[in-house]
Each structure stands twice: as structure tokens, then as C-alpha cells.
Length: 103
Ligand code: FES
Image: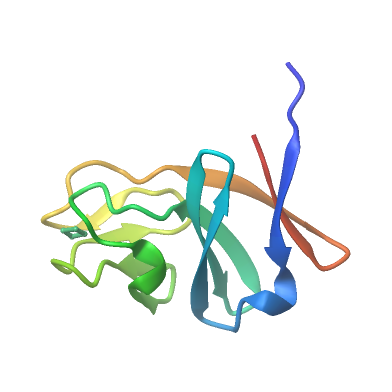
């Protein structure tokens, strides 16, 4: 099975320890820069209407600003309730300042 890459943004578009929301086709994603390492998840919180790109980054944790549930950016696993369902994460490739995911 071949994997294809989708370019989401430039590395420069995302400040250190912040996130942006990127739409690509049917995907609505949050792109995080954690101290120079990029992570990509679905932007939608699995618990409700929260947008994870609007949340609070604390190390590798993203806390939803809606009900303060939280996920591990590396795995998507829930680290704080009321979230119950992991958030989808994507494999990130950064090349020549392009932030891409493999799908
Ligand atoms: Fe994110 Fe409820 S919508 S914690």
C-alpha cells in the first residue's frame, strides 16, 4: 500500500509551543509545534465542540479549552477526562520547511 503525503503548511507558520488549524480536503487538522517538533491531530475534540488548535499546550499534552479534557499529542491517548475517545494522530514529515502528513 502506498502512502501519500499531504502538505499542510510551512514550519514557519506555526510558532513554538502553539498550534494552527489547517483544512485539507475532508480533513480538519490541528498542527502543533512543541519546542520544534511537529504533531498533527484532528482539530475536533472527541468529546464535543472544542477545537484542539485553540487549546492549551503543556509539554506533549493538549488541553481542550472547552471542558479541559486532554490528549497526548504523540499518541492521541486521553490523559484527562471528560474525554474518553482518543483523538486521531497523523504521521508527520518535515522536509525543506514543509510540514506534511502521510496518509
Ligand atoms: Fe473538548 Fe469537551 S469538547 S473536553
